[in-house]
Length: 143
Image 1 (cartoon, rainbow, N blue to C red):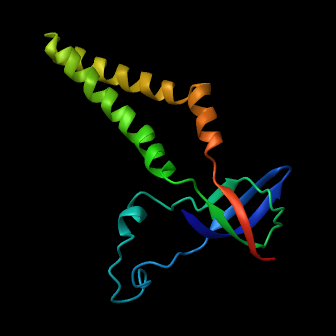
Image 2: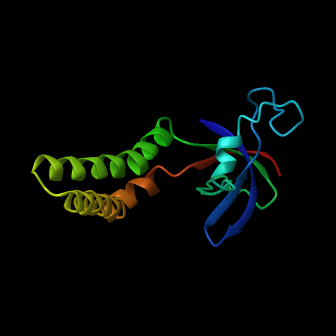
């Protein structure tokens, strides 16, 4: 997946870009008569639109650039970030319930499994994978 972005800042060797509005749909999300299809995202607060990327092209702040996210990575990251904790929560509850535990113990078991899954996501191996699939700047469109 390729997205247009603008470089906002370069700090040491880290480059930050802000993703620009992309073509898609009618583009009238915020206008009167628009469908407000982005409303669900607004319910959860302002979305982060600034991302750290690799910058082999040497872009400087203010440059309009093309950023590439490896195919399938957003899907895999979503499954990892949301699917694993949900699976752990449900598995912990089901295991305790099938074992004949009382309701408070089922709750404690499910929350314990949830906490374990969150700790698992913070392990060095998972963090290394996330760093290895970081978006990268592939082309400077205009300086």
